[in-house]
Length: 260
Image (cartoon, rainbow, N blue to C red; front, side, top):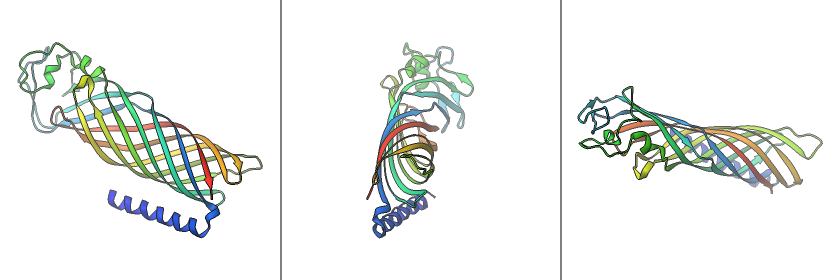
């Protein structure tokens, strides 16, 4: 499916390039950037194979959580940044474009670690390490609260945008797009790498804003977009488990579009 999606996107880019060559004055390029406000992720997963606990506070070393036992926690993110570049064709009231975008958000904190319905934030962090027979002196909650790491995504999108042209220099617009997102997840609180993996996922977005015509060939614009991927399926590094990481963001942006 993803291979077909990539082929379709590349074909669309080629078609836009050809159309632009045939009628160059309707072709444009744009660049924009702004703040990325990534929503909290409920990281839902399960152990792959039996997991044997280390020495916790109330959970003893050697407790076996069987294959498939649910495990997860919630992650909050810092405000990040996003940059977007596109090439497109203006058909008058409708624009079609191919866009490449990148966004990055640091991890602020992790909370609510649980496994098999057992809350682990108050347990000694040794519980997460199979074979650990003595306490580490720090709770799971304190270990993960530090929140080092980040979530980064490279997007390749095909967009359709409707311009509401009028007699003024201001042109409101709305649009939507779909494509593919290449997601890189790093969760490493307190220098302990829990997840360091990447995934490819379906991506989609909706956008709205307003453009201001500086000249017949140049437009400033500002707007909002909601951009997301389906859950990124990644593997844990600290123990054998798989997780679905949520990846959706609000983007506040400003940019420049130039026709040629």
